[in-house]
Length: 399
Ligand SMILES: [Zn+2]
Ligand SMILES: [Zn+2]
Image 1 (tube, helix red, strand yellow):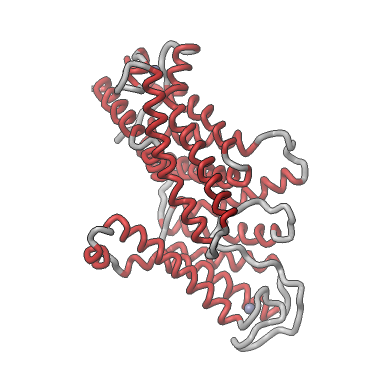
Image 2 (cartoon, rainbow, N blue to C red; image 1 turned 90 degrees about the horizontal axis):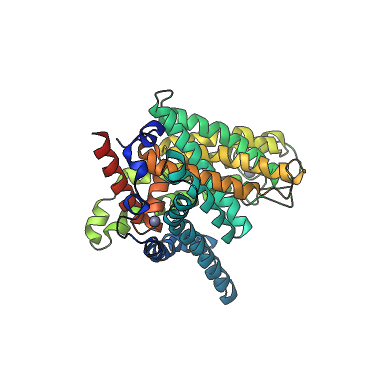
């Protein structure tokens, strides 16, 4: 178990060590340390962002023109610079802070402070991507807090509880998303699917299962609409699992296919079930009442959320809650409840990054997996080397 409390860190002999002892054991020179971190992080962050941009291009489904390709490439480079700056500044900010302000390391100034400051690099990303990155990081902070509470024995995460949270917050999120459709300054949201506008058409209630109600927010028969969505998302879920299972074993395709099991359909069942149940309930309500309403999203989202039971996951269970907060936050901005000149998104990012990277070093057991992988890839394993050296020294001190 790797868990360092404030008391332990601040009262061990390590705080008097030099920056080269604690942070760049591979060289005594702070400038050399910066250069080697920058080199590692350039390769690392380009590697980290490549699949993300590829996936985004693939999910558009259509061919990109030359101009759009260039545009995507520029965005990719900007994201790369963002990752590179955050990754390479950690060691160097520590060297600088130590030389200028503090003459020793402490629980708060070693990771939390420099990583909060280096979060300012988020300005390299264009504004709409900043919003998405903040959404992701806030969600990870919620996961970190939940894991901390669990470790302290105050609550227990179970698949059932997570599904319940997901159901309730999916209901709220879909309702807010349907209201948000009428807004012309929509906040960029990355969700499995975007519910259609509330249809203005009205008509008589429809019986049976054939055809569609005039109020339905889609074209064609309801059955086609429900089944098409279910099949598509089922396919996406299965494809994602296949890629994750097969790619690491691509050199031995026979073994890779043999390793596929029925349990690999779980993600597909969740994706397909989520959209299928949502569409089914909305259609049933439109058919029964003869008109559409944003409120239909509440029961539809609630029941659809039950699909998470097929593939329980803490970060996904919390995601609709975080996205609902994001929509409410953007409404506050638009109504002038938050002053426009306040860079809330950027500040929030800095705080979240500080907290999460602090958790990576001091409380590894409750740190979300995503952050561990992110730091591992972006710094080309340099983060793990620093961490391992730090842990070894701490344990030596503790014994
Ligand atoms: Zn140094
Ligand atoms: Zn319908």
